[in-house]
Image (cartoon, rainbow, N blue to C red; front, side, top):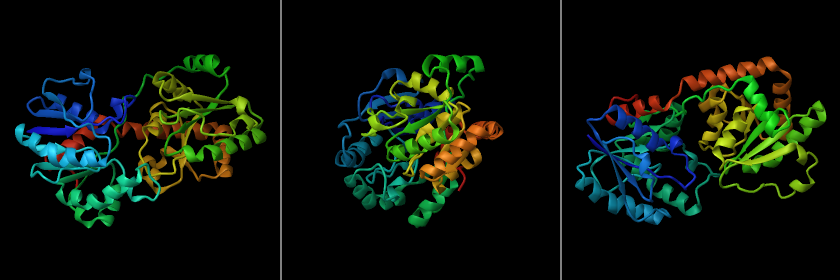
Length: 372
């Protein structure tokens, strides 16, 4: 087989190790050296990312900067390229396929956030998706989603998806070497004066809940009188403190703000944290929440069906209410047994997911042996 796959990195800071198409198809290229893989990029890429001889990297212009260019790229540039390279299977980047080819196509959907009123898509992209999604579903030979709940939701919205759904699971990076208690304490001695801290991920999907979290931290401090700190990890798009009135915040001296751009530093802060908080208000997949469980750190996250179908009992769920958040912070801080149990559940959850398993499930969907 010759498989062509669109590999798209959103910006220069994108971590290739968490890009679904790149990670899965690199694994598959290594497992199946007799098959050919064509990685299609729409912007310049680092050649060192290509790890195997059976991967051919192709830069396809124009660079996709909007949906109009994406439409041209998929429906007019790709069909000729597939013919030229005798491609048997084409895998697009989330929510897009080509409507002008008869090659086997797989539609990969990491989440269904485009169905939600609040999402990360600009208005023009939402309009495009609403107009073309059903056409892509009809055209697709297989549709890959992370879990059965998501598959059921998709078929409920678009019945034509029935019979095409396959399940990939979630890609989890290899577990980092677990730090010793002494190593973690040394990191805290260096960066937080030896104090424990809750770590909170501030991303595009969670930034609106920053103030409730700060208020919850205030309530936590008032009731427990502890010296515990709060560390905010800002994503690459949230480079500055999102709280304009932060200068007047009573506990501002006990809040540390770091950038997720500094990946090694951020990873160490995650590993040494007492617990992590990710209060998303959108149904989008953010790998930062996985990184907490990867590092044996308990996770507190938004109480919603989307999160529960992902984390099951591996997370503690709270509503986006300062009182509810502070209550769960206090319970987790006072109950060391509960914290240890959440760490165990998180490790169990992580052990059930891997990029290798994701890649195998994807291969089954492409060879028509995946679970219906």
